[in-house]
Length: 271
Image (cartoon, rainbow, N blue to C red):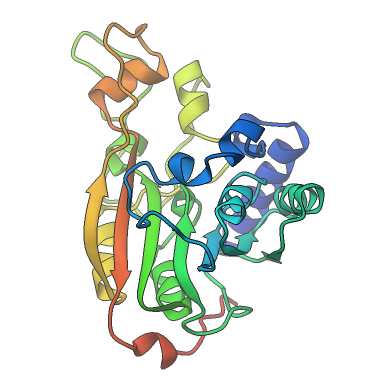
């Protein structure tokens, strides 16, 4: 499957998820919107207030991320590949009177956005849907002002390598770490697998040198890194929480843009 076919496939997957009301495509609740920063910034990385900050919610359609940051007083732009996901953002903005800009494009091509435009870029789990993070990080660096923050979350490589059925020795490694091809889908979409892999999506494993090294090479410094805790003691075998006890599913990275090269690099356009 070539690059364009991969994008089209993954766009259709999320269009279907949005139309079906998947939990990943549900706007924030009234209670969450009453305390937006405590929901999106449990680690305290945003400094207590983002009022007036220019925030890009990258590959973050669905009505949740954009509404939470708008409720916290930010000037929000939301980018997503899926038109159906972005429609949810438009609906929430209209219902609540939020002003936000919506742009349908791939995370690899932010040519519709200006150099050094954003104070903060928020990027939920989605880099797994592109074969390389290099153009993504280059574009994020371009649109982030010097000193700005890039907070991204990714699927851990080991989580995409490992199986979903626990043996006596834990969860086995099924797939190679060094690979260019997509990671094969689970043979059976168990409850654990269905929470960790979007059915029908084409996904790629990105090594640690791609994620951490790639950020540094793109003009960021890493300020913090956490592994969101999903493990639970005595969880049912093969459940999401049980697998997370053995294998951390995600990593969240706080990176800061350095220098002023963002104003010098041209936009990257994926042909």
